[in-house]
Amino acid sequence: MRVDAHQHFWKLSRGDYSWLTPTPNFEKIYRDFLPEQLVPLLQEHNIDKTILVQAAATVEETEYMLQLYEEHDFIAGVVGWLDLEADSFPELFKEYQSREGFIGIRPMLQDIEDERWILRDDVLKNVELLVEDDFPLDILINPKHLDSIIELFKIFPQLRGVVDHLAKPYIKDRIISPWDEKIAEIASNKNVWCKLSGLITEDDHYDWKVENFKPYVNHCIEVFGKEKIMFGSDWPVCLLAGSYNDVYKSLLENISFTKDELDDLFGNNALKFYKLSK
Image: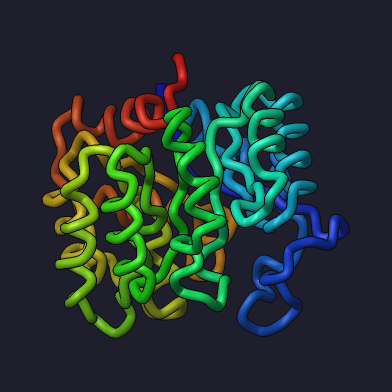
């Protein structure tokens, strides 16, 4: 089974995508993106299932995605949003754990002003519940957050986590240090995985080159290991810089894997991390 471990849907009329605005930066994706638009792309690339990831920091977004999960067989599971800072989190988390298709939580750390938000006492108290239930955390960050994530996994080494988009290294500026050292420290924890996703949007949107991604991809393969990495398209965000096929091909052109290793990258690893059956 082949899996795209990271994609989104949104419907602008829902009104809770605070980051998505009708500005030049986002004009290419400032419209609805729904399952019927993705299905042909999945078929073209022989992708059987996807992991649908939240794009708004609301419970309503989580409900919307779970509704889509119920309606579309290709959605293997939903990584939703719940407020990790709220006193009501324990009750809400218990409720959503009972919902079929709810397989992960993602706080939008990159959009929170406090770079150390994940280390607040009230947040840590709720993260501990994830640890106790072995429930995964998707980690959406920029390089400036890496120190906080290192600290988080020192506090909770048993937390099952996956770093989205390689932690968004500064590909456009060709900066690799100290990102490389810090991501390696995070990767040393056996419970932390990495999504090889979001690459083309971290380079120049109009002049990205496949070879620019190689040092970042190779480093993550080296430090996480081929057993802890997974492919994610980041569709439709990727459309800011290129097509679904551009994302797919740019990753393949930067790696040299055996068939079994490709099967892991494009499916098996995501199924293992999110504990999904085939």
